[in-house]
Image (cartoon, rainbow, N blue to C red; front, side, top):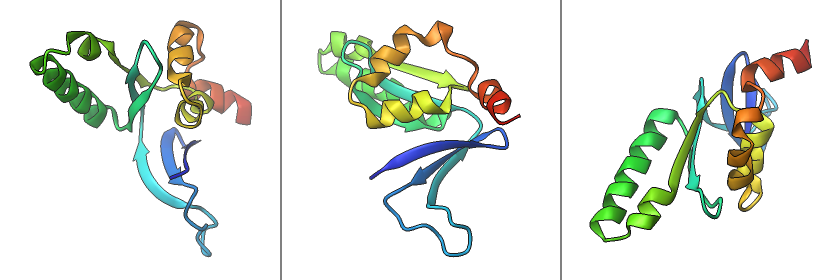
Length: 124
């Protein structure tokens, strides 16, 4: 599935680019609309686990950590990181399309621009 986030009117829209564009709107199938995005990944490798609505992603990560700890995999549980907030849409899309990119984004997180303000300035 080819997924891509777009920022429109202050919200993140996740589209499935593998679907044909709508004849009426010209847009691909909408999978998600959310005010902020969360990304769960392994800090050591940058392997992407989940992305989407922050409440769902944090819930998934807590459950995954709990299961890993119960199985004795403490290091794997501690390796799961969740980043959420108004992230730059191009950074989110790179996390989806480039293997291991989440780790690189995470190392630069403090210096990334606010996702919504950066997009607003680019279109102004």
